[in-house]
Length: 241
Ligand code: SAH
Image (tube, rainbow, N blue to C red):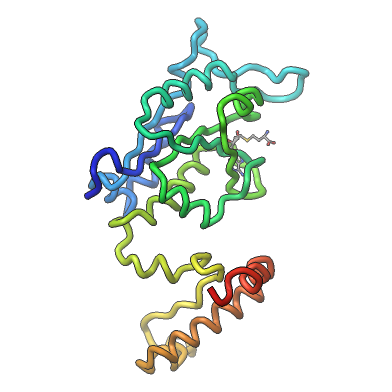
């Protein structure tokens, strides 16, 4: 068990703190949370509202549809979290404008002390918050969610499963898609024959060198076919490492 000060800790700022831990309360992440292998704190953005209506948002300056989260309220929440931190953690706003989240960033986040995540809602946050608080923007992909909460859950799930002691078998983490710049080879299990299709005989041969070769060839073939972008990078950067 890691020392208390070294436990990977996530703080999530949201208008809907009840959404957490949500799915992360189950299975591997849930068990790990219960065991104290990682920590999750939620901060209700609304508790930092100061006016008599406890408002957190306002119409966009210049007009247009929807509402924008106020920078003063969000900054108060962010500064409060920052002031209580033993070690500064990356401050991330989940945003469709951010750098798309990839396995490499997930790994570097795993290697750090944790994260502070800001979940937007409505039309997003006032730009001045992003300009003044050293915020990194991270996207889940080129589509629009209705709020940052599901993106925050996805990011934490991706990190937590890489923490020591969380995954059943650390070896499976080395083999999986993206870990070596390739998609994973196809998997098979019992029964050996199913609907007229047999498990590839090499996998039942017991010859581990052959199996390794077959899997690498399959991983390369699949990556080349379905993700030419990853394949190009693999050929240029990763091969021979
Ligand atoms: N008007 C904004 C979208 C706001 S969606 C725009 O067009 O860019 C509301 C909130 O959902 C955002 O503030 C952000 O926190 C979250 N969100 C939406 N799509 C996301 C994505 N692809 N990745 C991460 N967060 C996202």
